[in-house]
Amino acid sequence: MIKIKKKSDKTKLRIGEIKTKRGVIQTPFFMPDATRAVLKGIGNNESGKLNLSAMVVNTYHLYLQPGMDLIKKAGGVNKFMNFDKPLLSDSGGFQVFSLIHRSKKMGKIYDKHVEFKSPIDGSWHGLTPEKSIQIQFDLGVDMMVCLDDCPPNEFSRENLESSVNRTVQWAGRCKKEYLTQIKKRKIKEDERPLLFGVIQGGVELDLREKCAKELIKLDFDGYGFGARPVDKEGNFLEEVLQFTAELIPKDKLRFALGVGTPEDIVRCANMGWDMFDCVIPTREGRHGRLFEAISNFQFPISKQTSISNDQISKSIYKTININNAGFAMDFSAINLNSELVELRDYSRAYLHHLFKIKDSLGARLASLNNLEFYIKLMENIRLGD
RNA sequence: GGGUCGAUUGCAGAGCGGUCAAAUGCUCGAGACUGUAAAUCUCGCGGUUUUAUACCUUCGUAGGUUCGAAUCCUACUCGGCCCA
Image (tube, rainbow, N blue to C red):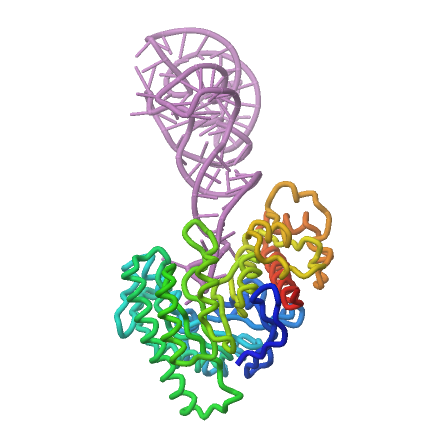
């Protein structure tokens, strides 16, 4: 499925490409989260400027709002949001389960399906693996994800085990429904969306292994890393990520869902993970935190492997909080090295001002800055070592 | 000129004898954010230190009553409104 073009001799980093119906994507790559079919505060037509590989939308959010009838009438989510590059839809598992794990009132998990309450209007909905897949076909995306049971990492072993069992069982139903939909919709082989299974198991390595083995039997295009990639204290689960990457067949795509900080991405790429998505660049941008590359990615960062996250982050980038008083009079460019004219021409003092007066242009500029940083980070990783 | 109401910590604005360094909101200062219930949330915001049911300074100014005053009284200063 993944065509490997280059491998590192020092690490597990692999550089390659994958084919989707909307085009070829160079790996490893990062997808910003456009959860509700919009890159928050930015818009989707920045793709030309930003050189995005792909983006992530969410089954759960779009099903609730604006609803699938509308998306179908719009001609699919790509058309609706005016984005012609590949899209991946997340299954909604993470959202529904995090909703329920945060408040039991918000839903209930059954073996066959999951029920949840819409936080928007309080209405009740059911989600089955089949329904999740059908919705994703209706979205018309390039890559889709099986509905999984996503537990918090600190769950008991017993709970993690049952979530693995449920995830595997649901993955089987997803695959079956996927094949049914392919047939029903008469989708040709080179037009079919890629399907990902999600490996759960929390921090229990043997459960990760069990989950991976069962999923591999079902044969997916790629496999994702389920659950949060960090523990409660925010420590990156390096051992678990490393172990899980090894479980996935070499010709399959490895998708580290929700990863992450730049240093987490570098480390995961060096473990052989191919795909990433995260809210960090856009969310932190909206909150005024800007990523700034040290030495503007002049050298390959994939060399940095066995050193700690802290060291990696210090050697790649620093962040600034544009809200801080020190920027009030800083008339230097937001980012002198940016490809985007507005990031070169607007000053930090002006961006500081925009945040102070809460004008959305501030969020937009900061998010653009961070996305450009992430995209350049991935381009740099793809240089190899 | 007469009457009347008011003056509170950057702003607005509670408080009307002790539990008040003084609610709340904003501003301000800082922090968090990892398959987005996040343009959100957290903390700080008179000073000092031994960080405490501590001390000092503060509720227009100056006095007074009281064990005790931002809160009551008197005068003054300034401001709003009403009447001349």
